[in-house]
Image (cartoon, rainbow, N blue to C red):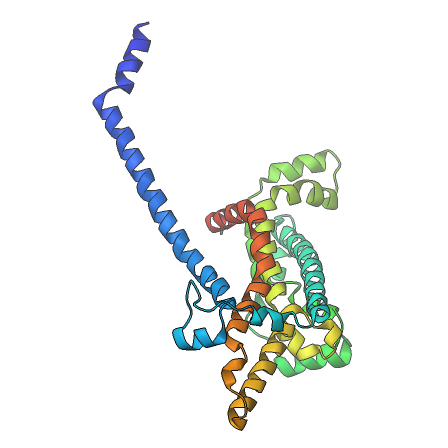
Length: 310
């Protein structure tokens, strides 16, 4: 009974109330700062979205505004003027992103797991060989000849997937993460008769979800935003991914704009080049923005653990 009275008196003491008040103030300050930072981060997206619905004339006269003075959907009309081509570009990008992310994660995690195994006596030599490729390269011309003349990958989906399938930096990050998994887990599985593949798929993969989500997001962003390999190796319009399709469209619009300026026959601002750029940004980044919240928890955890263990 006396112990309960002492606890009650301690919890209601002035020092305890002061600590609770200070904690409440710190929480309020923290939430206010996070809210302000979030608004600053959200501001560019809102500006891009509003500018995509602004007329070209209002952008030229007033610049980019949160609330456009003249509303227009001309940029989206031009962007979706050929819906079949747009949907085909979306389909190619989705296929390349999904396949590249799945197989890229599989190869990256398998390579990292082998290099993280301390009982693999050649792991230091292989690690050096992987790291050596980040210091030197064969150059663009030999690489282009290899892809086109020897591997015959020009105008194929594989040429959009294979070049980015393995990234040494991702292997190093994954290796550091898997190196922190206790060896007792794999040793107990070996005692029970489990093989390397069974250990990898049943134990290592579930324990590496934060790292897999983090690396997977980076790989997916790389495939989704890639247009360079399409520029080099894709000439078939049916195989154009979204980014390269938008790049070509923007280039054609700029060519028309310059031709109109040089001829003087048509007012150049009739082509919504600036609002079209904003509309392209919304179309290109929209799916990735919607996918991010589903893996945000693993993404944040993977970054934190990777920073501690790296």
